[in-house]
Length: 130
Image (cartoon, rainbow, N blue to C red; front, side):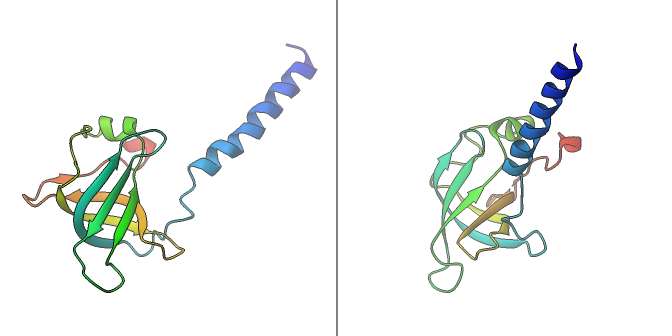
């Protein structure tokens, strides 16, 4: 490969790696203050690049009352961790452990789901664990 072609290839790789890293940034979530809320699943969006769960909380008033949106990793990560599209369905009640959004909106990055029977739905958080 010529030096020009090598330089061009290196520039393309370097310029695209920033986009990939920006997509996977967790800066929007407060990892220092994990939270928990109980509620009922209203909607499941099992799509790439991230699965989302819309949850109506049990709280009738206060800061946790209302509809929350929790983002999770990709379908591939959850599938490798034992989840299926039917692991959590609309109408299911559960406890949701999450990292809250830094902007204070109702939502966050889901870390664990605990079902009423005590079963925990978790997934690998790092590539080393997958």
